Length: 322
Image (tube, rainbow, N blue to C red):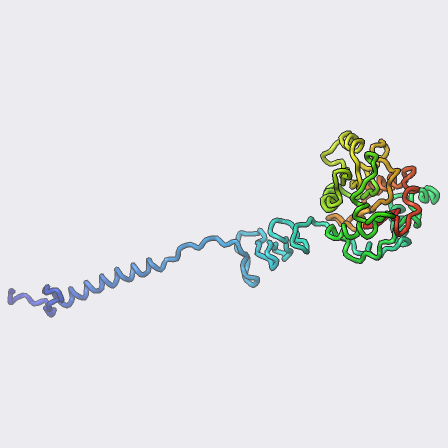
C-alpha cells in the first residue's frame, strides 16, 4: 500500500475476511439500519378495518356524515332500533309467549270479567257511539237484551287462540252429548251450523279456523266465510252443499249468506263474538263502524235472537263473548 495514503481511518478486517475502514463499516451499518427502519415502519401500516354493523358505544359520538339510526342486537335475540324498541325474532314479527309468531294484535283482558249485565251495557255503549242520531226506540231494536248473553266468567284463562278450544268445550254444550261430540257434530241439513263464530277481520277468522280444525269431521266442516279472495257466489255454492258444524267469518259475509238462505239459522244454538281480540290499532269487534253495522244487522235478522233464547247449562244457547 502507498505510504503517502493516509485517510485518518483505521483499517480493519471484517468477519468474512474483507479489508475495509471503520467509516465505510459505519456507513454500511447506517444504511442497513435505515432499511430495517423503513421495513419496520411499512409493516406497521394498519390494514383498513371492515365496516362494522353494530352501533357505536352509547357514550361515543355519532360518525360524521351519517344520520341513519344504527341497529344492534336486543336481549331477546331480535333486532333493536336506535330507540331501543325490540322487533322480536329479527324478522319484523313480535314473539308470542310460546315462541311462535304473532302479529301486532293484542288481547283485551277485561272481557274475562264481563258477566251478562256488563256485556249488555258494553254492547249498548258501543252501538250508541256510532248511532247518536237514532231514537231510544230505534236503539232498543238494535241492542240485544241481557237475557241472551251466556255468562263465561268461569273461564278465567287469557282469551288467546291457544285457550280457545278449552273455552269452547266448557261452554258449548248440548243435552245428551259431551261437549267435544257436540262440537264435532252438525245437523243433517246443509249449511246449518249449530255455532257461528264472528271475527272482526279475515285473517283473524282464518287463525280461528286453524285452531278449531280439531272439531272437523267428514260429516261436519269448520267453515270460514269472509270476502277476502273468495267470491260470494263461491261461498253460497259451498254452503248449500256442505254440512257445517261451526261457521267462522266476518259479519258482512255472514249476513250476505244468511240473507241469501245459503246459511241457515234454524239450528243455531250460539253466536260467539271474538270481542277480546284487538287489532294493531287497538280496535275490537265493536270499535269499527263498518264491522259493527253488519254485526248489529246479523243479530237483528229475524229468528236469530229467538234461536239464542231459552238455553240452560246442559243446552247452552245464547250470545257469548270470547
